[in-house]
Length: 168
Image 1 (cartoon, rainbow, N blue to C red):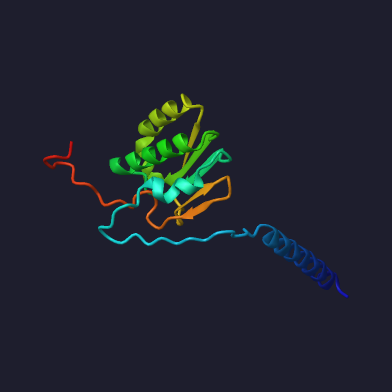
Image 2 (cartoon, rainbow, N blue to C red):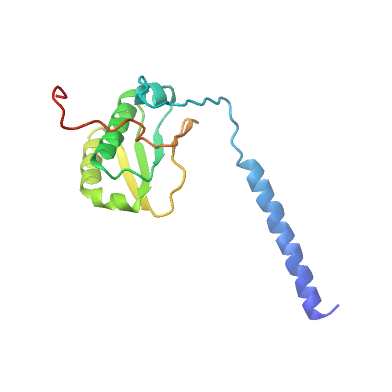
């Protein structure tokens, strides 16, 4: 057996070990789904507020929430995120951390995120905001076991008309 064949054989063994280890890790990290629910929100329908969608995910076991939504950019999207945070804080008495991973465009809203962070600190909740250029899936992970995959992110409401008699 030549030196090159010996090296190739050793590399093949090492690769096989890595693949075997990766398969074990993959099997160990599978999420056991105890409950699955799918909701389709049709256009112009009502009754789909954050409380209805996320209420069952909020309990006294919840200490952290991870929100992944690339589009917390426009003013109404920031207001949606604030409304979500308010719901979490009001319904999960042990919440201590809300993490937001959003798109790079949202960096323009750093002042708003800082203001919200300061406000949440008064409720003993830490807000961590990170920006990414490679977000694809929109989901919310609650550390009490709930995972909500949400196609439109937090921005599933129809955009309200802002200048309308009777809107105040």
